[in-house]
Each structure stands twice: as structure tokens, then as C-alpha cells.
Picture (spheres, rainbow, N blue to C red):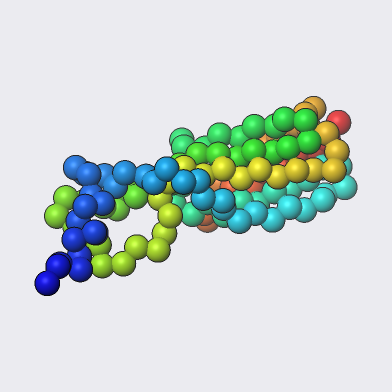
Length: 118
């Protein structure tokens, strides 16, 4: 009888798990705040060093990669539900945000982006 854990063992490549080729799309909340916008993106487990924020006309694009930093040599998986891969979140606004000033903060697993329109 085949080993049901075989697929899990094949996923481990040296000391890391190789991210899948598919993008995941993190959840986001967008708030209109009088003179601009506040965007909150759910990015639990993503390192700030793996984030990129781009403003383009009326689009905000947040992209990066969530890596499995917990995996260690000798570990085998019993269950995997968290996506570890590249991600991209694109949000369209009803106006141009190219000239907006942008500040951001990352806390409690949320990326908070404040955009003030000029």
C-alpha cells in the first residue's frame, strides 16, 4: 500500500519549501478618509523586506512573498493550509492616486497604507 505521507515529503526541498507558482490574493479593507484613503492588507507572516508597494494612475499594487520560515530539517507535514508563495493585491480607486503621498506601517500582521491626495 502506498505511503499517504509521500506527497508531503516530496514538497520539502533542502531546508525550505519551494513556493508554488500561483499567486495568492490577500484580503484587504479600503476606507475613504476625507483627504485620502486608508488601505489595510492582511499579510500575516510576511516579512517587511519581502513587500513592494506601487502606485500607478488609479491603482495601488502590493506584492511580495510569504515564506515558510518555520520549516526545519527533519520536519514532515501533517497538514498544510497556509499559502506560502508570491502574492499580489491590486486595488482600483475611483480617482488618480499617482500624486498621493504615501506612508505605511506593518503591525499585528496587517500592512496599513495611508494615502493623502494632493
